[in-house]
Image 1 (cartoon, rainbow, N blue to C red):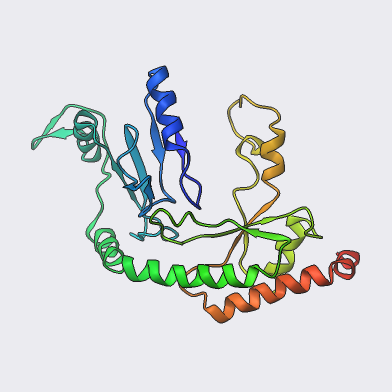
Image 2 (cartoon, one colour):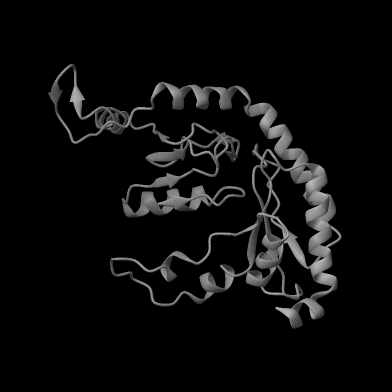
Length: 250
């Protein structure tokens, strides 16, 4: 399973080489990489199949649901049966299945989002450019930049708290949230640290655990204005410049 992060794509070539060498089929979780290209090719064509989401937080909003793309004709036929109760024809069941079809409301919303896609990407890019310009004055935070050699949606804003950032990520989040800035931890805690009903293979992954404490998602949605972004970066500068006093109070 190759998982694309929310900024840029994962190492598709490397994973496809491992798949070819090992004979293990390769699937991609592409829910955050809709619209993007990898080496000039649009995502959706790699591995045996790629899975996408139509959740409201994704680039294509269908209220909920998702879709799968594949160049494998046999797999495409099988998942088509599975989507519709396993029926072939009117009433012959040939496979496991459920009712996984998009209803008309979901489909209509997704089509409307598709119509708006070029303008949405343009608006995303203007917000990204604003963050890029303003965060250049905050070297203690590193903006994870999009690879602009490829097509991208500019949808997500992720920053890394560098070693010189004076307050830990949890306290930074608490301060931002208390001021109405809906920042979030970037994929934390790490999956192997979450309690599950089944046994996991790893007890400690020190590099993963360190990285899981260093990244933030900053507000970037349709309701975030350029003035909002200026206020967010000003607040981050305030936290940095008054870290000692803030730290003594929290």
